[in-house]
Amino acid sequence: MAFSSSFSVMFVVVVWMMVGSSSYAQLSTNFYSKSCPKVLSTVESVVKSAVSKEKRMGASLVRLFFHDCFVNGCDGSILLDDTSSFTGEKTAAPNNNSVRGFNVVDDIKAKVEKACPGVVSCADILALAARDSVVILGGPGWDVKLGRRDSKTASFSAANSGVIPPPTATLSQLINRFQARGLSAKDMVALSGAHTIGKARCVLFRGRIYNETNIDTSFAKARQSSCPRTSGSGDNNLAPLDVATPDSFDLKYFNNLLNKKGLLHSDQILFNGGSTDSLVKTYSSNTKKFYSDFVTAMIKMGDITPLTGSNGEIRKNCRKPN
Ligand code: HEM
Ligand SMILES: *[C@@H]1O[C@H](CO)[C@@H](O)[C@H](O)[C@H]1NC(C)=O
Ligand SMILES: *[C@@H]1O[C@H](CO)[C@@H](O)[C@H](O)[C@H]1NC(C)=O
Image (cartoon, rainbow, N blue to C red; front, side, top):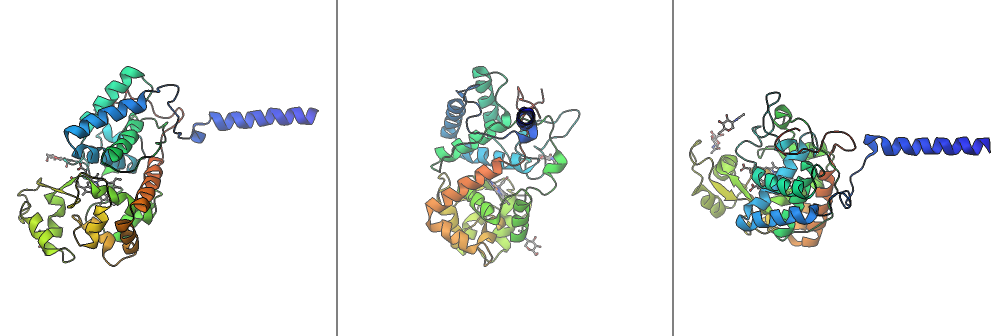
């Protein structure tokens, strides 16, 4: 009797410690089902109207989520403007003049705050907006794990440190940088399939279209026509990452790679005689497999060191700590 009651006291204490400790807190797909049942439809409707105005916005929102998660985890840090106490991530090399969609996130946040003030994090809004964008552009859907909280700070230096690989990266650098975030080579290739939508600037593919040999000649010529050889001229001219179907989330990106029509060096390197060739081939003819690996990898990416429990905060304005 004495043994069994002290045993049950201990059991209760252990369970209480596990539930109470924020390190135990987990993301879950029903996190807001009681506290903000409207969050899913609210995010979806704002993303829908933004993408119907400009298809590219869907791509931009997907990329925001990636760049948020790779720098100190999915904590909304990329959304913070500079303050007097820190320089944020927006002007770091991978982001400056490149990431976009902040106004759409503000719009989503304003509507969500109206429905349920102080409840939904900016980090979760990014995760939902990325999923909704993929779906709206014709890609797969999935249940988004929620319950992330927002950082109180952002890190220019972390965003600049190379955790987000540059488009000049070698295959082993790409693999290593994803590995460093707990993502496999397979996840990396599947996630690169996000380049089936969106655009890139001339300055980031000039070297490829003028100097590389593993490129389709007529494709290179077409890209050169709006991206001058001379550095500094036309740097911001845009070209679609997927030459075939730039506004559809499909497998054409991988098809392009088989035809040496990858736009970025980091795209074509995935099909250039190396260890990822066979996966690219598979995805190029198997939508189901691409979608299922992409979804798995997006969920994994969304799990990168979130703030949970009582860590961080729920920002009122995604651009500023409370
Ligand atoms: C594998 C390593 C990756 C590299 C080196 C890379 C590099 C780039 C570059 C250089 C651009 C063009 C930026 C500009 O012109 O300013 C871009 C755009 C884009 N990236 Fe990636 N990326 C990678 C992985 C990913 C991942 C994992 C995702 C999402 C799952 C993603 C989604 C996108 C999207 C959607 C765009 C177009 C954005 C827009 O049009 O606004 N990328 N990427
Ligand atoms: C970001 O881009 C702007 C405009 O091109 C430039 O003036 C600024 O120096 C860049 N910031 C950083 C930190 O490189
Ligand atoms: C092409 O390569 C040459 C030799 O390495 C280099 O000098 C030149 O700047 C490169 N051109 C472009 C457009 O990257």
